[in-house]
Image (cartoon, rainbow, N blue to C red; front, side):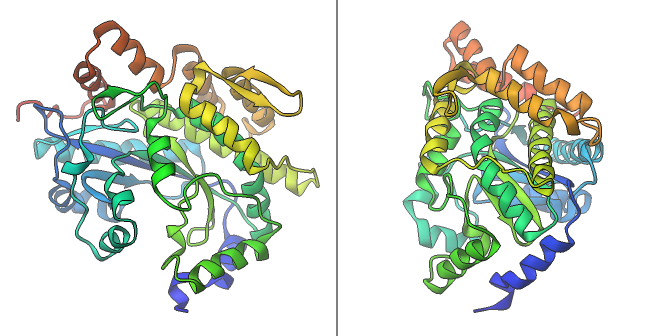
Length: 390
């Protein structure tokens, strides 16, 4: 088995050497025609133009009408904020110069998946060869948060427990109530599409420890199921190449402040779990069935619904569940410099997340295109050139 693909001993060393509670953010943007707001296949052109200013921080993501930007692994949220704002600004300036409009939400509201083009690279040709229809249908746009966790056993313990908090994180970040020209009545249509079409993409089960995780990964390689460990697309996963715990459940956020709020909540939760592990506390580990029920509720109703509290055997409002997560992580807010970012979480709970804002607009106008136009406006950073009509 090729060492570069899945040397899990090297992965364990990377986790042992990883710096605690660093944070990295990845965002996937739609490339739009400035007049029609339809998806446009111009990634290669944008990447070439942005290579000088963004280097390897601009990446492709399956289809030619999508672009991903990635921050570094920053030492704290303040550094991550500065890094993300800089990357966004550079990307939007380059896109504006090319007459490309950028937009951020979990789905494009009226795109036809049959019109999309898979990127012509060895990696994505292999993905298409393996997945075919499942790859073709994936016209979705997410955000990922990487949190540095030191210690192989420690990251598995945090991974096991973080699974149970994914519904709260998803509900907070839900931003895709439309697809294929229809109001789907789902708050995160992206999650429903992506996790149901891609293999190894939904809620994973817990592992007994690092060796149990390694045994699973090696079995997939041996059976030819995967060629690289990143083909395990779970909604949360240890990332052996980076030494991070990666949360992949979130819709892309139109407002950058929402991106930072979601990232801060993920960081705070992962850090609290790691600290509890250090202190010998028993971390809460839900079964797949338990997480799946709340996962569906977050997809369907977002912050408007309720989640199952299995301890009390009752439903609690999802906003209350997110508030409880804020309270659980509060002891680390000052230490990690998260105060103003957690205020933004409270602000999202108060004024509504992306899905709620889109649904309100749709109920006022009944026009999916008008909603999409407004979302594209929300996505523009201050001072970015407006590519309309260029």
